[in-house]
Image (cartoon, rainbow, N blue to C red):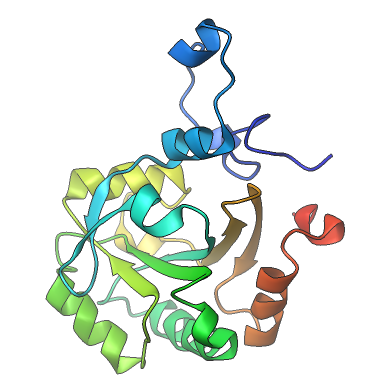
Length: 201
């Protein structure tokens, strides 16, 4: 059965959620709405994008959107340039939907060195357009968000090449590789809520 926010905060991430008792709402017999559950899970931690603008992770970027999330850092000598170039092709295929119904997010795993200015230069190098946010912040805030989306690592070079594709309206998520064929990633975005796709590992 396809998992929903009301039954599991997030199908792919529920195993990462911190253990604990029932929430105050649940203790009072009130079931949180899908939006409340999503907001609680992801948190509204304030990060900063490549333009230096503060962004609340859930309310400013995720709420009501389809999202693509990957991890990287600008001084990466491994897969990061390849991932970013590939996702730039994905953005072009998605067109004007990015920034309106779709948001792309790259979370830095090296917030100490990846300042907004450094991220901005990196993004421009790959022709990144509007609607794709390269996020950094204080190490503590970045750690909080990375922990929520399964991207927390001890060293930047240990980061994952996974791409998370999700729909915050339905709570359905799938994983891909950020280096997968751009056309295949676009297919995932467009068919995310299909029964077959939603069951994909």
